[in-house]
Image (cartoon, rainbow, N blue to C red; front, side):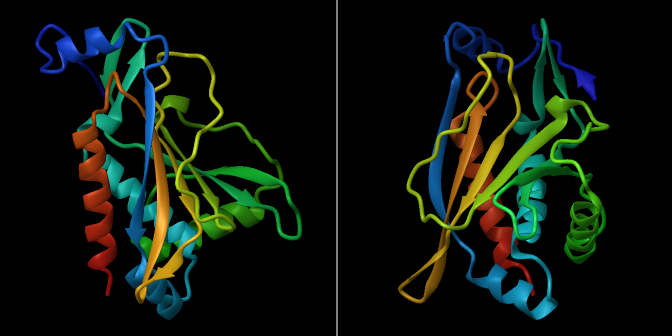
Length: 208
């Protein structure tokens, strides 16, 4: 983690202008081709959802802007972000928040996430990491949505990327899944979202 020298920061002017917005958040929804991921998870007997969390965490960490955080008058840069995802209790309509560092390869992470979720008895336990170091993930597998809006605190410094996966459907022989991501425009522009979507799609395509 390091503190950004804002006087030397290439984003200085953009940050200043966008800091004047009352609500500096925006989101975008786009389809991701998950055909290869679905097949891979089936062959490896791992969770499709946990695998998505793993790959999306890597893709977000790979672009620096997602790791910028606003802390008072400072902008800091984390070395890595940590996934925190909703997970349904078995046989229940209620979800819990599960948080763990992304460690190991995709299969090791999926196993660790399953163990963490199964052992967790609280819906919202204390998290042993800075809250702004998290990525918030959720899944709405019942709806092939075309847009999504999160609840949020009215806090212009909120720097947590929020990623929501939807129901995939077959389109011309390919499985297409809506993915919504919400970010703080003071830190993240459209080009960075484009990098994220492209990065995630390439990671899915490279699975074998």
